[in-house]
Amino acid sequence: MSDGNLLLWTGLGNGTLNTASGHGMWPDNGFGQVGDMVAADFNGDGRTDVAGKLPDGNLLLWTGNGNGTLDTASGFSMWPDNGFKDVHGLLAGDFNGDGKADIAGKLSDGNLLLWTGLGNGTLNTASGYSMWPGNGFGQVNGLVAADFNGDGKADIAGKLADGNLLLWTGLGNGTLNTASGYSMWPDNGFKDVDNLVADDFNGDGKADIAGRASGGALLLWTGNGAGTLNTDSGHGMWPDDGFKAVNPLIG
Image 1 (cartoon, rainbow, N blue to C red):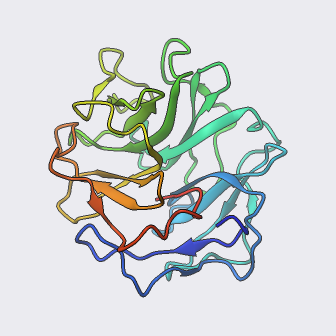
Image 2 (spheres, one colour; image 1 turned 90 degrees about the vertical axis):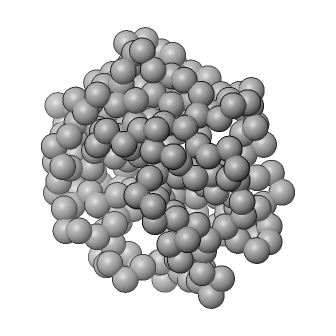
């Protein structure tokens, strides 16, 4: 939230959220200065953690308790210095296929880099290499990661300024298929959608994309498992526009 409170809305497994949820994951508003947050199991304990970047470029990890809250004894560095200051649009996934959660992010020049996870809550300091041969991600925002085409490898989706939603398929070795970068939606209908998140929200085993409309409504576009979204989707996950003050969304 804008006041720095970190809230959790639990899913019902049918593409909507539990309207009785929206509780705090942290005892105070200590997340006010944390940006570019991502969620994954970074320390290998089977529980979802939250990572985020401080304004000075320090990348911190808050470990999950597995009950919808974070361990208040956590909040340690995943990287030895503040080297993430110029990295934006963080996203998490197992991009190199080793079973450990990695972090990717975009530099200001449009270069997309990958830092591989060690499975203990830190990143491999020998990593930070390009996932794409040029700086072609300069105009791509709202990056999210999931297996959208059902091949068992993490892909990356993102939105262009004109509202076109594109998919770059992963090769499972920490790089993206340079023959990819195609549309997931038939037009530029994502122009007024921000805060994209990806997950299987309706329980069909296929990755979906949720996002916030400009008015604050939280919408869900269901995936068909073939790298595109179902054109008859885009329905509300919440009964009103209550997500207007929620930023950023992580999932």
